[in-house]
Image (cartoon, rainbow, N blue to C red):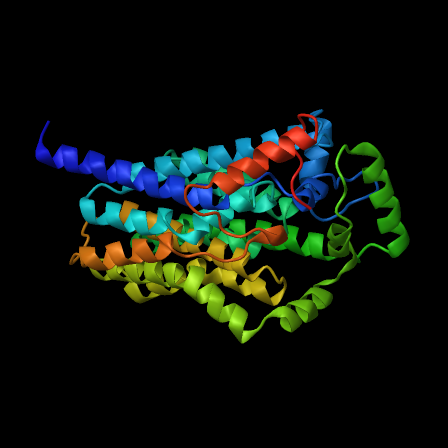
Length: 392
């Protein structure tokens, strides 16, 4: 075995260790909020975020049992992480780019993704990764149409979260093509935009549920499930878009923004810089336009802070979108450009490893050797007679 292959193998092992540490920092049982959200279906008429619950009902999946919900949630998370690892392995070969991957896998973004297991964000990420993993043009088109059709039904944030990544891959190809091929690619992305726009508009049209309707829905869910229902979830069904914007504006502060920047946003900006650097290192047509679309697709999830108050959650999604945009650019270009200082990259990894902040439901980032978290999981499992429930 050559020295280069040994070095590559150790870099891969090191990346896996960093990813495992990031996962362990956010490990928890799925929250009751996420479990409550998964119970919404169309039994009382159309309701936003009811697609997953309706699909589970049609497929006879008993998500009203917390254990089944927890297993299903972790299955989706594991599949998403597997596809993400496959995408990384396929597109990042040389040592410098493996070092860039280490900046990503060690970041708080992976910690937050694991921590929100059970949320629909993870399912949306899985669907987008499935679409991005398709190599056959027809399979990719079918996957894109499928994701754009059901994505907004799963969660209305799809338009601002992951659609930009899907469309960027097509836009990149369109800028490099010419003639009939370019027109077909432009038509393809316009069709996807129309699908997502119309579906999102359809979901946004219904008025918020009345208090009486919400009480009936909560009572029906409470009778069916075997876990305590989170009553605060139903505020989501009561609020309009303007209500959400008002609450988001009231809860966003300069201190919160600064904390999010130190924890997550700088990682997103770093991969935006890497994307622009890679574009400029290659002979790409319409370079300015490609850079502009790359930036928009990367930062689009940050716009969710104007309609929702999970600031760290939106910035976590931005890290994923900026990394996926960078991955697309790497897969479609050849020249890496001048190498980044390895000591700088090591410093970024070190900053990620020592980053800690508050998570959801009163949790905080777990610390090595993670014994408190393991003990809490075992204790909760035993206290519930073998059925582990999350902390309220």
